Amino acid sequence: MTKKYEYLQKFVNSSKDTSLEAKNIFYPVCEEDINQTEMLLKIEFPSQLKEFYREIGYGFLIIPKNPPKDYKFYNTNRINPPSVIKDILIYGSESGLISRDVYEDLQPGDLPFFEIGDSSSFLIMKLKSDNPNAVWCRGDIKIEDSFERFIWRLYYEDPAYYGAIIEVAYK
Image 1 (spheres, rainbow, N blue to C red):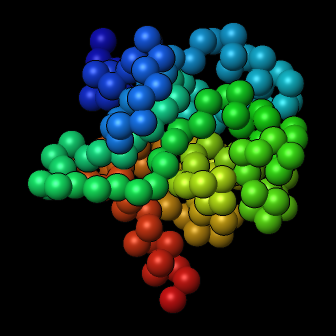
Image 2: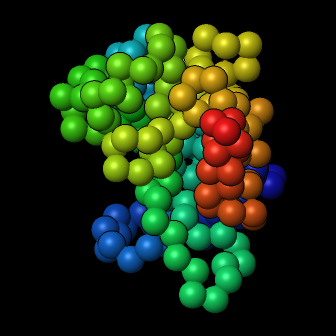
Image 3: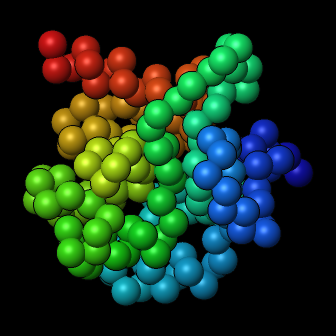
């Protein structure tokens, strides 16, 4: 059976490589972490995010499939693990994982699943919406209708493609 995110499987590193070299790297998430976080927060992760956790895990997606020569990328682009989401939602800016102003802008049901960079910029999923698998920026800019397509575009198109969408929305 083909898995949705099989194209990223080669980046899964169960040895917990923590080098700072810019690369795509993912770490496994165990089912217990998903279940405990959902129970503690009294939420259910969107189905596509949960499927990603089970198949790939959490980690960084910063290099496209075919990068140009001398490719440089400066964002974090981290798909947050359940534990980070839990800490952000429980402890807010006191967690050290999200800035105070960004945390204060979160609405009930917002899930900060993707860190763009330096604890001050996140993409969210809206748990209470008609489409909890959609990806949003700042609550009002839709980046993608599905998490699955969002991940695909990060890898096959450009790890920063969402920036152009955000820029156009704020013009």
